[in-house]
Image 1 (tube, rainbow, N blue to C red):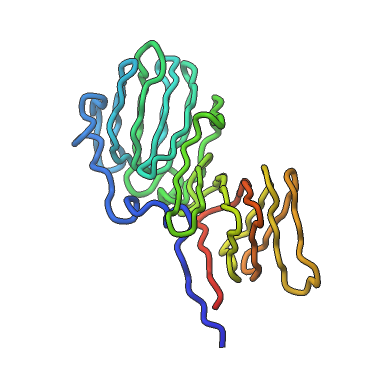
Image 2: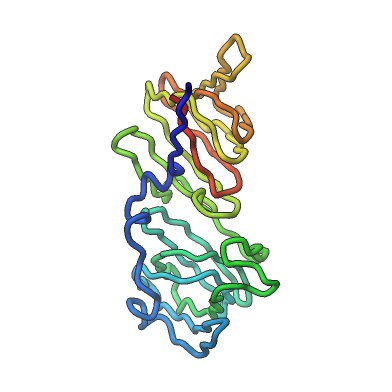
Length: 253
């Protein structure tokens, strides 16, 4: 009989710090950058001001809406070391889920924002984890030269997070680099995922197929939730994965 062993999603496996310890509250470690202006049973409201070139050290904030009180360019870095740069114009508003994050001001003026952090339920009766993100009004980007990759010393797989986080509810986009000769045994994903091969060649073996599916750079594949399959690379490959979290991988033995 096959034995199913449920594994945490790959990013969590690469980030033991996220699993074992959370960053302290913003007011404990990043107080110079946050001024509490209102707190009640429902919300905390902060003014956030980070001077040019300075970094608010890793701290925890709950799910929140951020409103830019000035043009700003910032770099957010999670506890796993994955960083993303974003530029927000004056009066931009955006949603961020609960996270442990360090924030660096890359601009030439103070990164000045109003932060409304929700406690428990957000408007509409939703929980923080399943709240619907607001539509961002500014661009965010990640360039190859500034992407931060976290490597798993056991498998040799390196990953970088571009949007969201696969271990929590919500849409995510991440990239992975497979070393030459890497082969994942039979496994299945808890949610549907889409993959685009960026470089190299990715190979799949699906049930009912007599031949392996060989996907060169530029190829696209979607893997339904629960479909047991194998994937590997002979000479190494980089691919982008997209889906809805939380994503878990079930290894089949």
